[in-house]
Amino acid sequence: LHRLDTVIEQVTLALERYKIVSAAQQLEAFVDDLTNWYIRRSRARFWAAAESGGSDKEAAFQTLYEVLTTLARLVAPFPPFLAESLYRHLEISQDSDVERSVHLREWPRSLGVLGELDAKASDSTLRLVGAMGLAQRIVGLARAARATHDLKTRQPLSSMVLCFSKEAQGVSIRELVEQVRDIVLDEVNVKEIRWAERRGDFVTHEVRPNFRVLGKRLGGKMKAVQAAFNAWTAESGRP
Image (tube, rainbow, N blue to C red; front, top):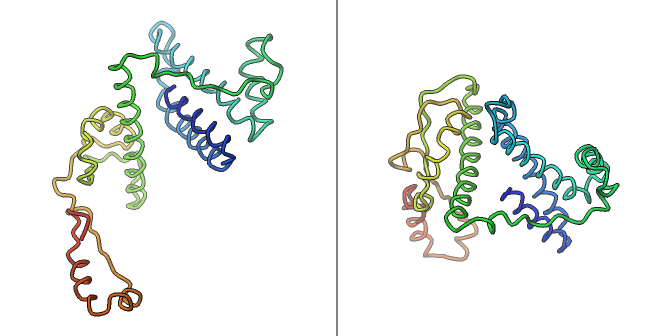
């Protein structure tokens, strides 16, 4: 729901500034996260038996319903007939007293999810959102690596190695990864996550200046500049 709040604010701001493409891209990314991540990762909650699922199953469905009904209004300016179909199936079918068209409904407003939480819960929610975004990034890169080496996801691997820059390491990156560790392992079908001790063992940078252009501007200083470029290392990330 916090993610939905963010999208409402971003799309509203983009449309107010007549940045139609940006608004559409925000919606596209959100729908992708919703269908390919939230719904897929929540299947066990949706399919749980009524007696065993309890409040968690109900919460999963209520959250999805809130997101879909809000999404129908958010996308209304883009695919109007699809938005109308969603609205009729999700809202009019449940409540005959609502407006007869999604295009007659008020524009969605932020739910203010974080505002309803205390400071500790709010911080925990933000960390969870950040951790989940990191998990999606790691999973995407891991799947790309598998595809590069023709390793199907169904083929289990003993471990995967994570390699981050020094800048990223300073943002409690390991704590965030640990928070979603089981999800990452399940998504990419590996048994263990290991951390690279030295980034340079996996990542190298090579900088090749355009001598034809720089030579005209630097003249005799070109040799010194070349030496600086050659001193570039994967560890420092800068000359």
